[in-house]
Image (cartoon, rainbow, N blue to C red; front, side, top):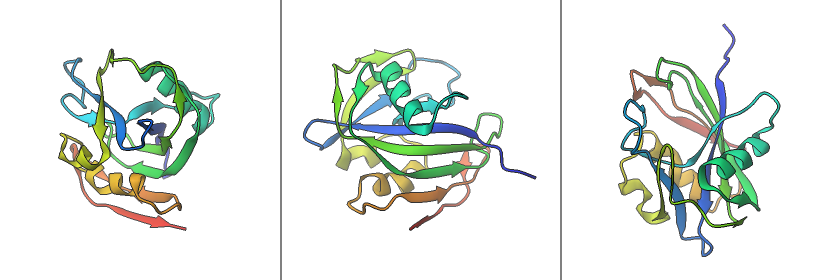
Length: 162
């Protein structure tokens, strides 16, 4: 059977000094499968978009800023991650340069600047603790990870780099 995941982007906007990431605390919508967790910004790709265009649109919509320098850090495949067991595949970016003033909140939650070295102490999806170090490490090679989920729980984690 072909793998037909929902395509998405996930981005981490960096502070001007590069020590903090802009995160969304999903704290506004009851019934949100992410309720209470902190996430990077992003969302589903539209049919006419490439991954970079999607990332820039999502950052504009969710944070109210325009992206400048944007680096692809990797890809993540999440079989079974969706609310109803849907498969997801995301392009993961770091946004080092941007213009504008970030919003304080959006309909999904509160936007907060969090020191990168404190990200793992936040309430995150269990699997985020495995790939976040790869997003922010000094290795310039993109990572490509697979993280199957079942019933809202990570089952395994593997990744490779070229």
